[in-house]
Image (tube, rainbow over the protein chains, first blue to last red):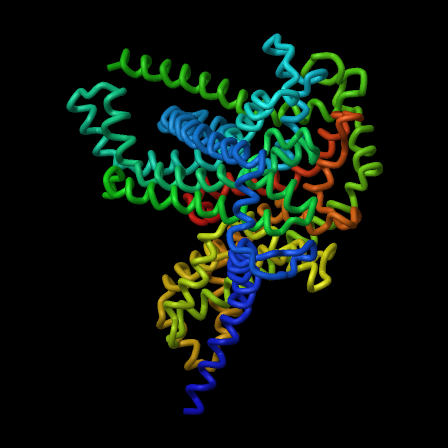
Length: 289
Length: 278
């Protein structure tokens, strides 16, 4: 009996630290978020009574909410397929090992070593209307960050660029993991390269594609840093808000924690919902060997 | 036969050249950043990509001094290093318990930890900020790293690795008088060094690159900013000063670039193990 309690104590000592932090900094705030969204919360974050759906009505009724929602979904809808197409194409291009492979593989993966805020500052400079190189190279005269559409386009290019490196690596290792006898067989059968890509290689790496799809989707739904860093916090900049940057701009700067909670939960539920949907779809389309 | 070979060689060369050209387009922002960092103020107004000379380093010294970047680099190192260290210790302990002990609620606790992966950190920003401010820990190093202490994916990878070590090893060690902790430290960790190093590097880069959370918890005390927050404060809409910003960005990229190159080398040697962890 004594042995047993000692053993249980030991298990507790090994597990307690991680459980403590998981509960305090993941599960508690998650539940608190849900509670806050249904409560009257003051500027110090204290609960001052039950509010029912008032926070939701207030948030969804705000003029900037539909915009933020639209931008979030738009970013996800463009970012995810664009990243998939770019990284699969790059991986197909780099698939065969050639003498210069290490060189261009390194070039393709390099964006992954750049942090979000560093990338934002670089792109802010590149897209600058006065000294930026983008306008110069393409002979444009666009004030990229002055109108909503072009500002969002610049942010989209930035987020897609950020994803290239790592996702390319995943696609490449998946492609190279296809048993060579399968590719040989398609050669013997005289199948055209295009057909081989779409009928053999892409279906065989579909588990990886699905993984990249999901992780990218979650990241895209949480996009906020480009809006915060590049556009700054101001009344005009709220035109390009996503759900998460709206949470930062309206929730934090005015200490409106009810609003912040509703926005977080909305983003979370949407992300989870779409992810579950894609898992349903996965059963039909993704092939596991 | 000979003709087919030359035809293939030509095709490979052409594809390689195309791939390198695409690669250069992809890393163009990085090239642009490095070149811009060496430009003088008047050079920056001209559309040339290359600076007059690569020996003009005033931007770097200005960024370090005026932008207080030296201090921010120190902050980032402390946060990334100790944050990673604590994260590794927690993950290793938990992974050991799940790999070797049998106890009640084992599965429940296991999924409780894995479940943290389902909740994106950004969703928790506001409430975590309130917790930290209630604990009076705003503007501390601890606040900057605390939300990264739990890494379920890391714990999972380590558990998988620990389970691939033969159980006989532990039994033999127990007969020799090793307790769990001494077995873990003197035998298991050295055996699993490659995985642990990879995870450490990966986690260091993640914490070094973190932006939103450090921004929020150090908002009221500029001296506690990390480098990634610091570089975004180097200019404003009124005073664009991009050459200074790009110099700051270059400085901030040095550690992750070095680790990236090391990682690429290891990957070519030893497959993708460990690189999948977020």
